Image 1 (cartoon, rainbow, N blue to C red):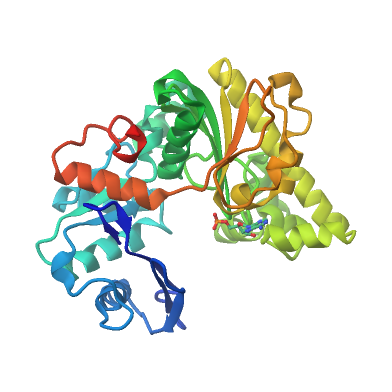
Image 2: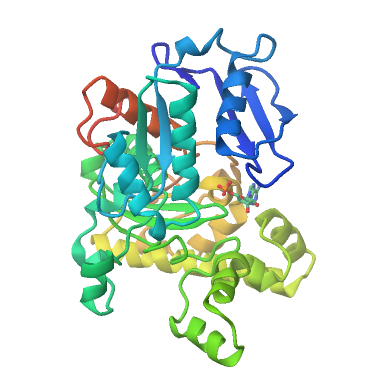
Length: 396
Ligand code: AMP
């Protein structure tokens, strides 16, 4: 919750385990300790109500009543090719989200439930959808068309979409500011490395390629997702292990990535600890993850004809100096000179290359919520053009 007039975050939080039992809210009023409250949320409507009740609670809340909430911004995942930018939610937008549900079955239905719940709890208050795919709608056709029969694109809109758009947008703009340039003057490679991982080539302020594809399974090695593999592997598994499509889906989405390699961990902290005590599979998982990040840096530098900055963000990117160092090892030929001391930073904006490094590398904590709020305010004030052009905080 942000007080926009004073540009002040009033509270942050999250409701976890919605619909699956033992749900709870984490709530942090600015300047106070984070608190956790257990509260059953069988539906998303319950979660939205719990958020509103917490924000207006006389003891732990930060506002008197709901009348001070003027708008709600929603992080929405998949809009297919229907929306290339953020949009005020109306019946047409809801229908479009429903129609794209087959492209993001895990994300769009809960998004819709959240939107409908917010509309019911705050009648008359505008809701804005900020799409995770929108930032990547600037990709050229040669970057988003797959080399499969073209009619699948024509019939079912099968193509690369890309995700984590608000994060890539935010950190690439921040990188331009840290370089002392305008976004349209620089090429930036953004590496969003968390549980989900995606990379993006941001050329002169716009996304020209990204590693996630039709779904968030493609690209980098992730916590539980495989990323790039030989496309014959699913067929091979179905034929040789007699697995169904659903079983293969579970294996590639939930049992692969660093979890698949280590057989036990998704959390990179656990992996690092085990690797340091000699666990060979954990060492291997780190090597594979870092090696593949390095390959994307090389690929995107080539795709853009040069790079000015590389950004690490999200849980691993912001915190793991070890993965950063491994991924950047040997990239001196590209103009990257790591400053090992500066690379010890965790969770804070920092330049981690030496002064004479031709290409700068930054750690930038992502702030997707800020992009959502800015787009929402801009739309309501009638000043929104395209979120690549109009963002308050990035004009500083
Ligand atoms: P996210 O999806 O952005 O919330 O990132 C989650 C991932 O960040 C998890 O795999 C965490 O293990 C990882 N992470 C958080 N803190 C650290 C850390 N200090 N070192 C390595 N990985 C971390």
